[in-house]
Length: 180
Length: 141
Image (cartoon, rainbow over the protein chains, first blue to last red):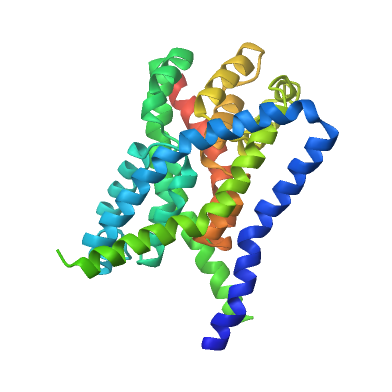
C-alpha cells in the first residue's frame, strides 16, 4: 500500500504541473512571435485573476466551515446515495446561487466527492451553475421574459437527467473496467 | 471549540485549494490567449444556414468557449440578428455555460477523468435537447 502511494506521487505531480509548464512554453513562443499581443494577453490574465481571487476566499471559508461542522454522515444523508429529492433540490439551488468562476469551486467539489456526495448531485450542481441569476437582467434584455424564464426552468429540470445519465455512464464504464 | 479541530479544518481547506492552483493558473493563462487572439467575428462565419448543422456548430463553439455568460448572450443575439436559428443560438449559449472543454484539465484533476469526460459528453448533447425543448415551449407560450 505504501509502495503504491509512493509510485503514485510522482505521476500525480507531473500531471499537476505539466499543463502549467506547457502553457508557459506557449507564452514564451507568443513573446517571441507576437510580442505586440503579450501585453493584452497578460492584461486579460490579471483581469481574470482579479475576478477569481475573492471567490477563492469565499470557497476557503465554506470549506473551512464544512470541514469543521459537517461530518461525512451528514453529507451522505443529504447528498449521498439515498438523499432522494432533497439531494436534487440542494444541488440545483446551490448551483444556481453559487457565484464566480468555476475554478474556485473545484476544490470544494473535490472535497464533497471524497466525503461521499454522489456524482449525480455534483453534475446537477455544475449544470445549474449555467443559470446565472446575477446576469438574468442581461438575458432578459436580449431575449425577453418568456424565452429567458423557459430556458432557466428547462435547464434546472434537465440537470436532473444529466446527473442520472452521467452517473450511469460512469458506473457502466467502471463495471467494464473491472470486467477486463 | 477544539483548537485541534480548527487547525485540521484550516489545513484541509488550504490543502484543497493549494492542490488545484497550478492547473487553475494554467487554464486562466490559456483562456487569456484565446480571448485575445481569436476575434468574435471568427465564430459568426462558421454557421451555414442549415438548422440541424447550425445547432451542432453552435453547440460545438459554445463547448469550446469560455468566459462571462454575458459574452454568450451578446454573441447569441448577434447570431440571431444574422439569421442563425434560435435552436442553434440556444444550444450555443447553453453549451457555453455547461460544457467545459478548456477547463477540463482542472475538472479532471478535481473530480476524476471519467467524471469529466462523461459529464462533458452528456452536457454537450443535453445542450441540444435543452435548446429544442426551450424553443418548442416558447413557441407554445
